[in-house]
Length: 441
Image (cartoon, rainbow, N blue to C red; front, side):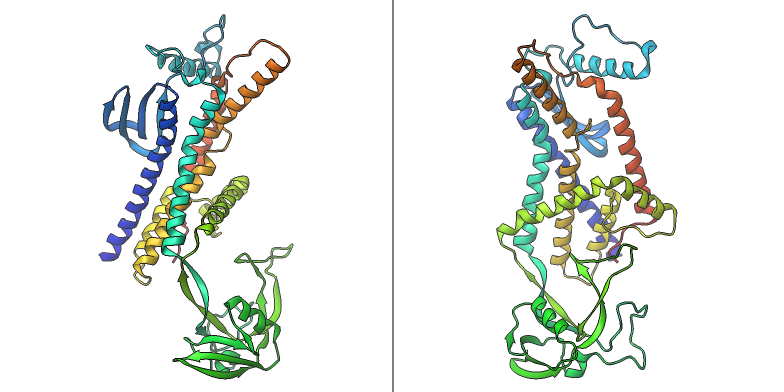
């Protein structure tokens, strides 16, 4: 029962974290919009029927039934049709009708609105600031949470203390994970190394990091290696002979594959010892690089999204396994949070740290995703404003008449396509996270 309650608690923490992140995202739009005088009629978290709302000044604040995002309603998001333009009706086609409907809805928000308080009348730079305010807020949240994660909780790192000693030697390509009679004894066990031993030196070289010790061991295959360890407060000298064995080549925590997709192996010295991890608080200077690395990973996923979605389809409807580094829905994130919270085998602080990391990663994803230059995402509005600024710049440069605001309503049909695709992608990921979820267990 306790495990179930902890699982539910983890999901609730992510739901609250996501709701707060969405709410602050919209605050990032709301504050500059009000500072620049735009009339904002609504600030809402969620979509669909309104559950609760209140009015302060000219703005209604509230929550809606479907917690799948949020929005603020600004007056004049789309410019009116040019003078002399004819109103479109359904007889001219569904796309033209969509454009006219968007203009009509935008025009309705301009009723009793003073000149200059419409979004489309603002200078380009002000519109860009308003639209970037939301993603910027997600970036700020991510930086703050990463600071808490790295500088407060700390990061697990390999220490110079032995954490595990293998009983036998198995090649990297072996399908067995357990020792069997006849398997050669691991050199570390034969040398008398024990968990808890702190490596002091190897062949007279002081050991400062586990990576340094690994490099020495790998280069000493077939040679006698003198190892000084500290055990129970006293130093002991041991001798070991690293065995030449086959290991996977690993770069950036990933097994390197050849052109055929097969794992690459190499012959290296092997003792059969593993490090004990220790949590180390990081300096403030480590925060921004960590956020940048997360942004890079999200960008990589988005740039390869078609193939990632194909892989997700193959996993959801076939025997393939899900890519743990692939796209995931909010449902999947909730499941991961539930698993983390219910893991009684790890300390509470480690579980809390993992949940903070999940919410931080969600905000990085919101930051990057909203910068995609497609409507209705924030990046689409920014792209429209930039195009208008460029067009007006060249008109002024060549002494031509001001072309006026860009009619972003014309791309409403494309916006509809994007919304449908995003909806389909969300449904696919939710289905995959239900039938074949990514799990930490």
